[in-house]
Length: 76
Image (cartoon, rainbow, N blue to C red; front, top):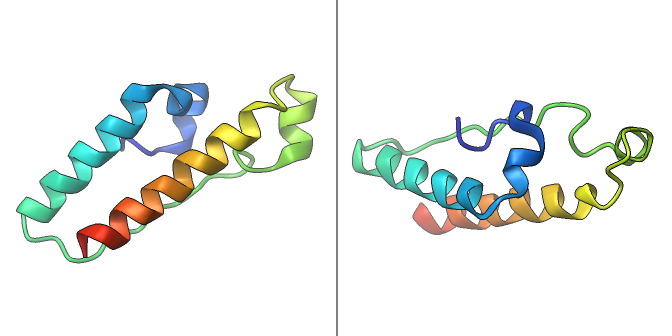
């Protein structure tokens, strides 16, 4: 839930990354071996972000999800 694309710009805060890491650690403690991350459209669609006035947000969203993928793989 911490990485839900519907949170929009909240994902660009430092707390979002921390929350996602805590959620991942909790899942791992429960014995979960597989997670699925759905990145909802249009969160990484640059034309939408341009239209929405948040073109600079694209790099932040991309970095968030790239780091999340690194954290998930590291937890495996």
